[in-house]
Image (cartoon, rainbow, N blue to C red):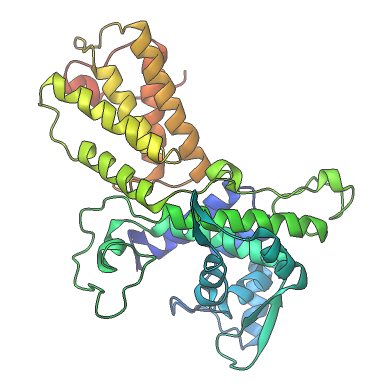
Length: 375
């Protein structure tokens, strides 16, 4: 069925892929693959009934006991209200950007985060640090895969700043311009929360992520460190919303600037805009990749591409490799006009061409015949 910018099946697979790349526990990654099978606070796409033991037994037989437990947890609490919004609300605006009292949060996690049941009003559950950390990691993967500019447009500018019924615009035509969404500063905050959860979870002997084989949790401690999502420098950095928006807008101006027929002098301004976009938001790949192509184009070439100046070749290769590294951290595209796999392939082609010192092809057929084949 339809889901945001793709199908729901593809979204589920993408969430699993992202969590797997982030070295989540296999059980948590499988839960991401089937995170809505019991329906949840966001969507009613129920495939199994959590109130029927035979249905739960079927899910356990497919995914394992622990994965089913995690799915049941995610489907029986209001994830956004009870965990995401509640914990994001701990951030305040400091002189250097968002900040929060980490020691206070860790104390609460050590005691257990108490949340309400979604359908059984009056009933509460207590989540330990690993449960909270895995839920937030899933929320990060879920958000970065499915959010793009169309959701922001419907919310009046920012998906995570719901203006209420009067400010919402449900009539926005899908998919709109499909510009990158403004979700990253919020997801960066989630990452900081995940890092705090991981530190508490390690002390409790229940670390996040894949663990060294052959050792039980907690022994020896040096081999049972949590695996954090690699994004935002392993969840250690935040991003100002103003920087995120300015970087997105600079990138979009270049991405939509024209058909390539403008004067070469304009390309210099594009390079500067993309460099500034990467400075403002160093966590996205696509500005680097567009910049790499422009660097290859700068000296032109013949039908098969001429030789490139050493400086441009090095700069183009470094830009393409920087973009490729970030793509591999995320496991999903920021600019969702093309799939993640397509961006990875495009970055690899540019990096290889720059590595060989070849400029951009001088004809359309030369560009269309670009490819990367290992013999």
